[in-house]
Picture (cartoon, rainbow, N blue to C red):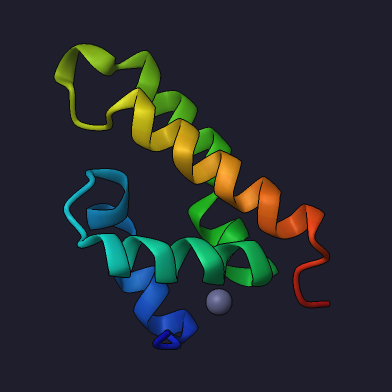
Amino acid sequence: MSEIDCQETKRHVHEYLHNELSDQELDDITAHLANCDSCETDYDLETLINGAIKQSCTEDVPQELAERVLAEIRRIQANGGVH
Ligand SMILES: [Zn+2]
């Protein structure tokens, strides 16, 4: 699995939220967010995704993706993450 750094993660925030990343990139970023307080704060995922869902008439962020991302982050964090 490729490691991505904070700069890379923050550069992809738009694509991430608009589901424009490959599965691999999505997984890498999700894993990074779950283990990186700095990036998690930067993305402010719950706020961003919840806001996107409220505007779901645009179909920009599928609810399925939002739920998958949040579930994955919670799963990683429940497993201890990196602290
Ligand atoms: Zn980071």
